[in-house]
Figure 1 (cartoon, chains in turn purple, brown):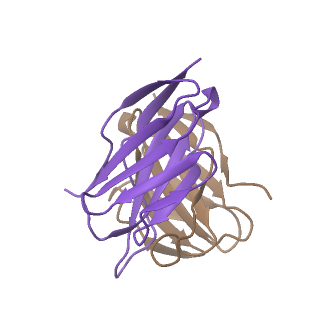
Figure 2 (tube, chains in turn green, blue; figure 1 turned 90 degrees about the vertical axis):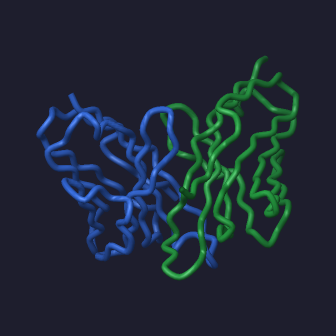
Length: 115
Length: 118
């Protein structure tokens, strides 16, 4: 069935290195993608989003890349810090008639930052 | 501006009891979404509500679950006759207008209610 999924369940990086978290989606009709960060015991926190008419979007220390040809989304975190340790989810929204704004979440990637 | 509020943060129920989860959206937000998260999994959409209306309940189990968002007061997710499989974290999100699609409004999440069914 249609789904948003992540390639790796756990990513371990050294403090100061760059992190890349990947996500695959299967519905070519998806037109809006979001990355959320979830720390233990907390709700998801918005990081960055991107529309399907864009290939790249940058925020503070984060960059999201969208490759519609292969239906792939990635989140790049520059100079990873211990505070970046969390579970990262990609989510998609599918436009079209009847769209109600519900988000379809992937399974999540745990980012572990080693000091 | 306070964020999305959920209470209780933790709720313990015995099998067969009722669980009521409350969500107060951010000020000025009239759209509420409920999601469920099982351990080690992503969030699964349950229901989308506007004031006094259920817009999309495609993710709600057909029995025992109901949701409302009255004109006054918080949104309520109600689970009747709880079973152990209902144990999960339930998150509420809100947005000022319909999120996603052409409007691309961000959904702001609350801290969640962790339901444990004994």
